[in-house]
Image (cartoon, rainbow, N blue to C red; front, side, top):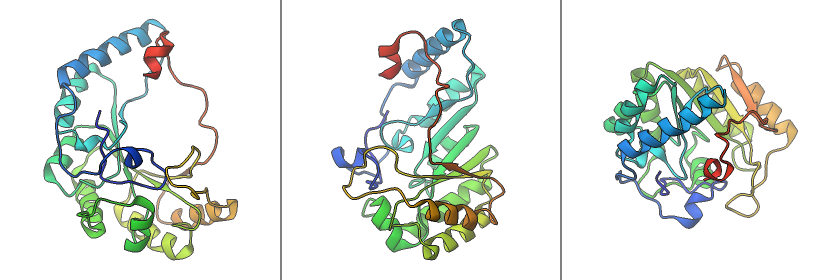
Length: 238
């Protein structure tokens, strides 16, 4: 999976150790990836584990992998729904949208719709423009026939004010995602001084987005322990 990214957001560790890029390249062999997935699925089925999704969420941005479309096409016959979690930075590219249309569910990152806030929290590649990114998200919404979700990472003092939440709510209302997730920093961040918002700010965000999106969910606490395992802990972690 790609360890490069187009964002160096204040929360993500990737941008701190790897370079930013907008260039798509092949990062793995689709056939080998499919074989690996088949092996893991077999082990999970043997253990009686239930599988909800096969999810593309690499150490970096998945759409930077030029083989993503082929990977999705090879995995599709396995009969397990496919999901992709993307920062949405490359959705203005028609080839990226075409690749993602093969998935069953796509989650796009929308941390801010105001330029200054977006640059502060996501620290994007210098050639990216917020207007183009948001337009790409809208184009993908019109093209995609699966379930489209959004995720907004709230960071204290960066994007948790009413001035940022109001236009964000308006954009999501036009986008009409199936679900909008509100998340907060829960792991050590890439930038010192990055903190989760206050409880009052989280409630304010929920109340701001709810009139525009039918389903708003908070990802602010313990994620649960219902994770599947093949029986080989070391391999699963790797």
